[in-house]
Image (cartoon, rainbow over all chains, first blue to last red; front, side, top):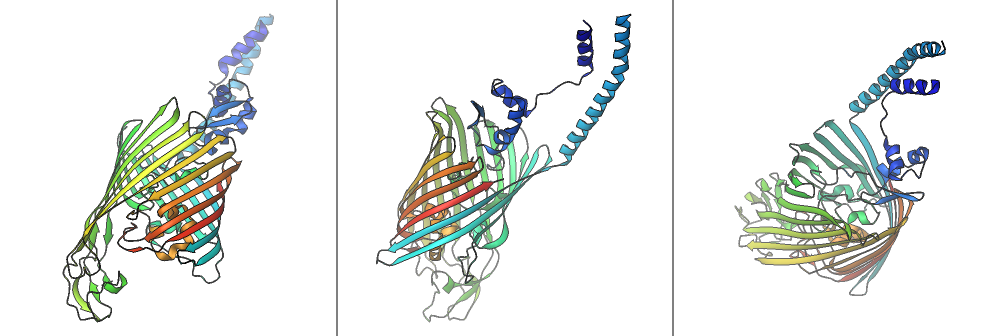
Length: 75
Length: 446
């Protein structure tokens, strides 16, 4: 009971959490990889891949999030 | 009593957590503010090219050569306002250490890609100004080079606005893009060409000196303006059998202009009188149909087909019309690019180009006959009058670090060159030749 109250109190005082890029990758992988592994692949998913392709992370595939800018006039 | 103690403990801890939260928030605020203040982002590209080429003319003459080249580009993107973005590329392209300092040197519309030396050129410098959700105004040095399928070799995303078949030049201009749908873009691009008053030497151009004494004849010329306009429809959708299906229809009009700058004034060095109007006019249109299908049948097969039709109308009735003849020349070329990128780190591909003798390509790289050494480049591959094929394998050492091995075969019926970077069949070297090139590339994007 005490522990629950303490957790509830801490929860109320804690800042709202927002999902980051690593969390998005973990979610896209259905939780098959850890957040640490996802963090290591952020550059691959957001910077290095070809838009429209998949990025292989262990046993899962994540959509490439790399936005190509400055290639087409007017976006 | 125990509950009371617990409550006291919580109340004691609360300010500590509150302070921690406040500290965290201020640090996040600081990060966000710094992010807002930093309007720049940077990226770049380094490319090494090795070409081993063999040339054989119809007369049986052979010429072999190996060439090492280097290209480096540095991209800067700035977002000074929410609705305005500036894009730029500064590029150097050069041959490796040259002995005689006489490596091919061609400026003009592709100077950043002409391998002229270690100087840096502004290859791209334009701004997109979002006027509404569906309307964008752009101005500056536009991304009109490196269109699809330039990006296939290194397994990259699309790099340029116009299909490679339609344009291969860096153009300054103004553009309006209307996007009524996410999948549809309609563009009007205004890229005026202009010439300041200059002293014009007739003998320097097609030996058309207008007299019979063989002396150099020069005229003072008037300013010249040619209002080149391009209309473009760019539609992208997807199907169950193709992740991306892109159709581009592009029409470029180079309106009627005086080929010899409407020469007026006093002739010097010769006996001919002033020519108020050369009487030689030209008008050109380029129509491109381009279809690209990515990830066909979901197996990583990409296919791009481009067809370019050129029409060049020449009127030659004036005093300088001794070597130009009136008439309409229609040419066409088709480029097929097939790429298999279904394996994680391996890309296989081929290009095939077929063109008619009157094929005129908007490409200044092949602007002179001296460009023989450059025929191993993709752009000159594009200018082949005749047929050309290219097969390659690209290995991804890292996601953005690739190595390519390829073999290119060009069966050249003629070499065309002309003005506006547009190859002109009326000024053509009709000697046939074959060029076979084995090449290697290393490409690093960072």
